[in-house]
Amino acid sequence: MAYNIKKLLYSDSISKRIANDKEFEKFVSESLNKHIYHDIYVSNKDSKELAEKLETPEESKNVFSLYTQGEDKIIIYTRDDRFFTAVVFPHEILLPKEGD
Image (cartoon, rainbow, N blue to C red):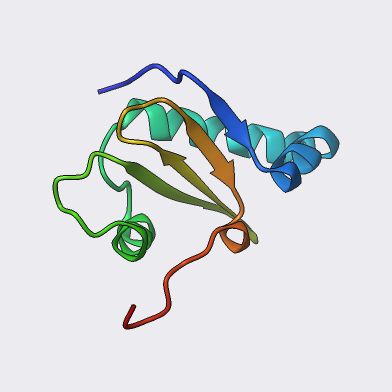
């Protein structure tokens, strides 16, 4: 099931990389399409593990996806109310420490 993005946000690092790397721009665009048109909690094993670290309530409708191309990894996150979707590098978010 697809949904409409109300606001699309890129981290500064993602924006700079897109501006200077057409192949990376294509990777981000393709990843966004996968994320939007597969409106599920998680899209693969890595995304599931990420979601478990970031989100605890089972009833949450937040959508997390982790996409990899070569050495590049990006996280795409959509809030449960679909107000915004953000694209960031994994190192740009704070993950809870084990046991928190």
